[in-house]
Amino acid sequence: MGDIKVFDIVYEVIKEATSQFYPIWGIDEERLHVLQQYCDVIDILRSESGAEGYTVDIDDINMTINIGIVGYDFSINNNFKMFNELMDRTVKFSVSKDKEFEDMIIVCFTFPSVWSKV
Amino acid sequence: MKELHTYDIIKWKWGIIVKKLDESNIDELIKLIAERAQKESQRTQIVNPYRVKEFTESYNEIKEIIKLNKYKVEYLMYQPYTSMGAISIIGKDVNIYNTEVFSKACCRASNIDIYKLSDGNIKIDLTFHGLTKSLEDE
View (cartoon, rainbow over the protein chains, first blue to last red):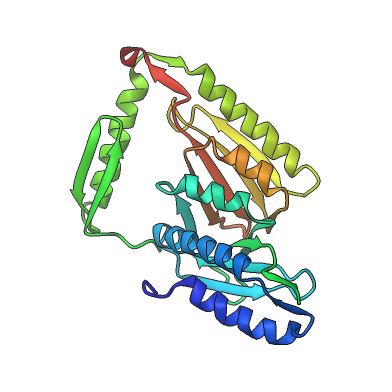
């Protein structure tokens, strides 16, 4: 898990979604670059919290991007400022139980859309 | 569960304890930290009004943000040690839409812990350190 970057997963999901949104919507490179920076922070937080993995999905209606950190627990001490700054940039912050593995929780950050009208 | 590193550095008020961590001495380390914290609590403490204000402001803001939801917000002050306090949000699933305000309320805390309770609820703990300070530190 250590070498997997969340942005690699996010980018694959975005590419797939873009094919559905095309030709009305296209990727806004600037917004994508910002999202990549958020993903770098999520990698750091996942590493500190010792969480097990990620979930990534896209809300087809709002076109927002949900990035979740999956683990048994989530604890941030050293990068707490980073966590707050990231949360400040989300449209929603949520914590839920993993439907597949009930012992695990998903700490999810919802980010604004990276698509703009073509 | 969180992986234990062979060497873990625990930052502590009186310095840094470097300890080789494995299953045999983790209990010993926890005991050592508890003893030190206990000793600190027994020293004469005065309330740190600036920090207490931050704590109460955060609690009020968090309560305001999630008042429409069915989450429980509670706080513990001066527990488990006099210099500590925590604000907890408990719910089945926690969804926060007003993230800007929530982030502002959280940023005064020292750290965050999120975990599942045995009753199936989720708990978010925001821990605040420095609610009191020792007179000797003044």
